[in-house]
Length: 136
Image 1 (cartoon, rainbow, N blue to C red):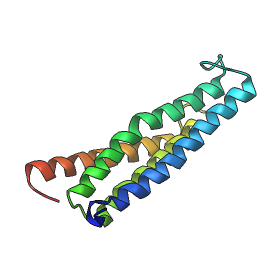
Image 2 (cartoon, one colour; image 1 turned 120 degrees about the vertical axis):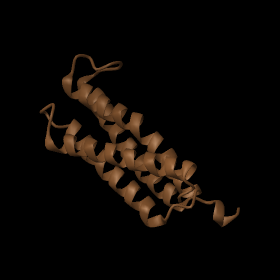
Image 3 (cartoon, rainbow, N blue to C red; image 1 turned 90 degrees about the horizontal axis):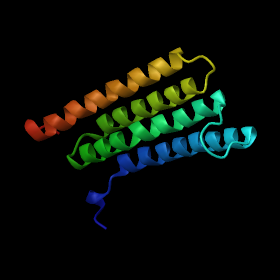
């Protein structure tokens, strides 16, 4: 395999996000077993929070990993890719922690989603700039 075609930065963040997704899925299973719930949330608010924390990550993470890989393929600098990947990971981690807190709205969740959206916006502008303006 040609080493130039490999995506080492994207692979790193994909691995980190796989671990996060496994942790969130394990939390759902733990809540299901504890509440003896097979399907849905069984009216258990803690299980419902765990399901949404996992689902929310599943909604955001894949698109950003695709964007990260595309930026890496366009030749974006590794430092920029690590900035995007690292801050997005921090944002998703904060959001997941916030989603497991008893209060519906909290600082971790708010900071996590704000950071996630900021990185998504920056990556979108970067990707569009690569295509339209020929930037890397």
